[in-house]
Image (cartoon, rainbow, N blue to C red; front, side):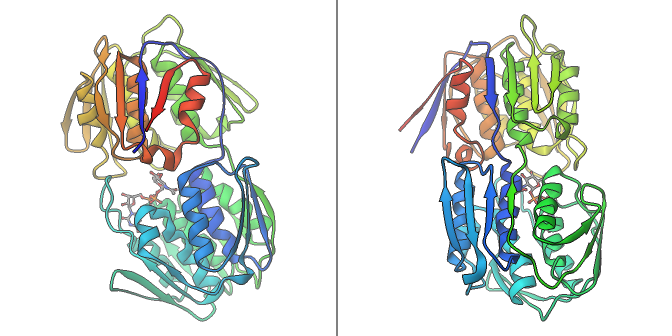
Length: 419
Ligand code: UD1
């Protein structure tokens, strides 16, 4: 199994090109199932989760063409003849549950393995199920599968009791082909929801309010094929900006969407960084300074993203002062804490809150990645730790970061992958 070795101590300098967003491309690939004609998706990042989604769609019978270097995936959904998302795939990628809404709306049936638990908590799918039931679906959960059936879905009113990105996406996709109007209240407002809605609109869907907490969808009879380019990854961008800040360097992310990063840029400013924004470029400059500790509370968008929590914890580990990190989205997202402590970090945990007291330097050690963003935080910590940090189980990283070691090397980091 591959490992990554980081030798700390180099302030990062230079430009890094940001890829398409993992959390946008996965729902968009699932949305292609709704079309009556071939779809072309561009700015697709080269990620393990994208390959898993392509396998999932291929298993349903869709024609898949993947031009990895060009960042293009073509999906021909006309040949879909199965409604089954099997355990083997859903187990490795929770986002597989996003085929539920499209299959149900387009084919009147779906069988999706229950995602079950994962390292960051139990992550149920009750909100997805209730929302689709509100559109007339009949759903039972048995033998580890969500089994859903419907005639043509009917527009309805969905009021989420809590904000869920995935459940909003599932019902949004399903509602595009339902008969009549669907109103989604307390909808997630993440930029990835807006990107999905943009793609659906390009296919002929009628959607208003994406990006606000009320989305209204007028169902249509059919959706056409379209071309859509995936939005830039705000979490990848944020991760590289923290890499610049934590190392006392100067990093500019290009092909980014700075307007989706407000909460993250605010915290970098608070940490003492200079931030520059120009078009699709966003830079962080922390040369000659040590970051100041920041307090973080994770919230649904536009609040501070849970997917950036672990990276800012790494920053706080070497910052001046003490910072608190409140994780309010997931019940068990502090798996990186023990690993950061192996590098010498001073962190106390009390329930959902971690208190991090910055120390002058971390020291390299072997550590283990436990989930995607936790892996990123270990790399960031390794960039400032004295000596070598060897990170095991980096398949988590390959699920969500395109060629991260190459991009970091391009900024001067001493990082390599070993088998
Ligand atoms: C998405 C992102 C993930 C991010 C998360 C929160 C993708 C592919 N993944 O995950 O990177 O960390 O949003 O920003 O886009 N919940 C329920 N019942 C449900 C669904 C969710 O209780 O039916 C709970 C979850 O356990 C969690 C909270 O709601 O505590 C938010 O989860 P949700 O927004 O649904 O996250 P995902 O869509 O799975």
